[in-house]
Length: 271
Image: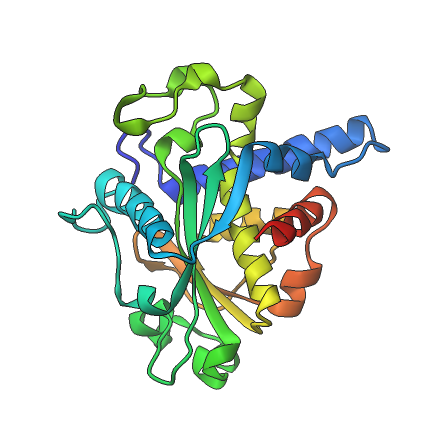
């Protein structure tokens, strides 16, 4: 739970995604012939996808996770080194979004990528009894054909929509007075951009089966983007009400449309 807003982090991200979709639909209705690829144009102007291939970049990802999961939400214990990590990070690829204006990192997500028979996905450690559709158990597939997208985290200041909601510039936070209102309106695309960065990498590496443990509301709103996660297990209490969801590579590759498809193409060319 977000102690400042009283709303779960994923719920806030769900609302942002839903708001983005509604705004885009209104724009299309108002001017059907206009190029909806403006989404990708505006994103790349202010936000940059980065794959954490160095230890320094990985620590940026772990620090964001600590800020959100340990300090803000208290889901995990505070760590002396300010980094939130677990055993899955040994075979995971962190993705980041960098805010171009400030050079700060505005969010992270990771792609857990098993490469050995002993490597598990987080949902497997949590328990395969949380998956009702036995045909889609991760154990049915080769380890190199599966992945789990997890640890989505966007710092509070990059979830703001308006300047008056920023807390200040302490601890290296961005200065809202240096941001245009239009730039602030791009911030809700960060969570979408993180998912699209992960999916671009998944398609590039030809991974067939993708799992996530998310709130059904976030899954519904991701469907509006074109990422049509399918719930394959019951809702359980795990850092909020969540369930295991699944999507195959073909659906992931072909599901996006309009500006979101162009945004992923832009991301894919960048990473």
